[in-house]
Length: 131
Length: 88
Length: 85
Image (cartoon, rainbow over all chains, first blue to last red; front, side, top):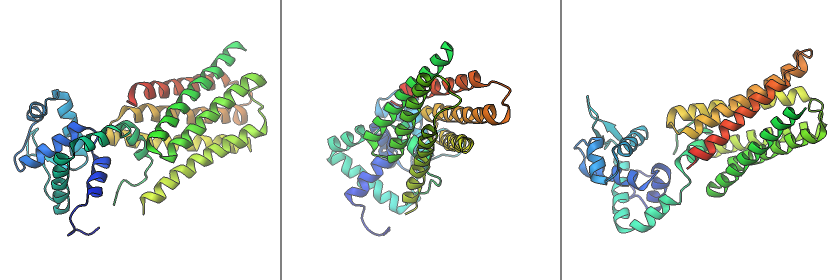
């Protein structure tokens, strides 16, 4: 873990494999990242990504649970959590990579085993802290 | 008793189905934990079917206990192995 | 020896059920809910076998054992078919 180094493409891939459940998840995250520090509601996400509202809400819930975004005070809107410089650089790299290699990244996301299966396997980790 | 045979057959078939799902999860994730579950449920299917054939489910042969023991140990091993890696 | 195997089986099943229940609380994926219920049920089945064979030999629990095992497996298969995407 070298905090000053630039994220590599395998860092990007690993982030996507570990944290991103679907292409709308990735696009939602990147949308929030680009809009920061502006807060977005599920309705706004749903409109921008052309997904139904309940899917947008569930995406926001997932991102919240992973600590990638945080809720604004007193409301439903969320904002990208820019607390960590390492992660900011990583998301920036993810954004660049996704724009350049859309087909490869979405292919990679689609070939992942489903989120439920991964959650099943993750449940058997005693401690959830990852590197 | 027919209903006992039915119940054992039910457990055998559902265990086999579960084993196949876990096998498929193993193919997609290459996570050994799923293989351990597939083996455990496959054996549960075999043991249940065996009990129907044998006809006296309360006194089964020792080898069934031994294999059950092995599948439980395999599951524990898979769980511990997963956590040994995660701590690295 | 048989008793030890049933106890171990109960412990392993309950461990799996507990880990999956905790996972369900964190991730809300329904597959984990159904699996957790199944493993708890299988743990109970093992406990019932132990009770049936070693603690209450005069009472015949084998139909109850079958029912608990059958319902547990049914719930698991339901979850695998509908909620494993």
